[in-house]
Structures are given as structure tokens and as C-alpha cells.
Image (tube, rainbow, N blue to C red; front, side, top):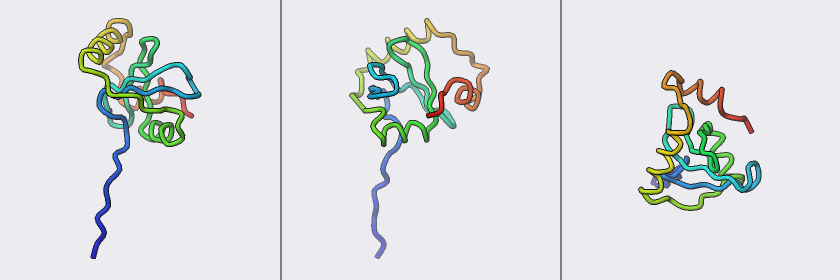
Length: 107
């Protein structure tokens, strides 16, 4: 008989709020969207955008450099994302790879 195994979900939760425990201790990430090769977050305080590769995000969570705090309510999520969009210029000309390579610090 074949064993049934649960697939463990990797990656951030929708509207997930994460705390940095070391690298940027005292700062937070709010998950915005998934692109082909990276995740887009709003970095707080800031607001600014931060892009993490899927591998980097999973590694940070596994090693507890990033810890899940909570899923934020819709109103807070919408206001935070709108504030970031109003204060940070994010060019539509970036490809997913450009965002990752130019704006993500490798760990």
C-alpha cells in the first residue's frame, strides 16, 4: 500500500505578518504577492519593498531568522500596501528576476 503523505506548504501565508529575529531585528515583513521566482513584501518600518527568493524565505523561516506573527486584517493590509505604493516607486518594467537580483540581499 502506498503511504499518504501531507504536502507541507512552504512560502508565506496570504497577508502574513513576519518578524525578523536577528538580521533586521525589530523590523517586520508583510507578504504582498508571489512572483515567478520571488516573494514581494512590504518592509516595515519603512515602508519599502523587499523581495526574497522562495529559497531564501523558506530558509529564513526554517532557521527562525523570520517568524510568523499573524495574518493581518484586510483593512490593515490594504492600508499598508496603499501606503507603500504611495511612498515607494515600483517600476512595472522590472521582471521577476530583475527584482530579485537587484533588490534582494543574499543570506
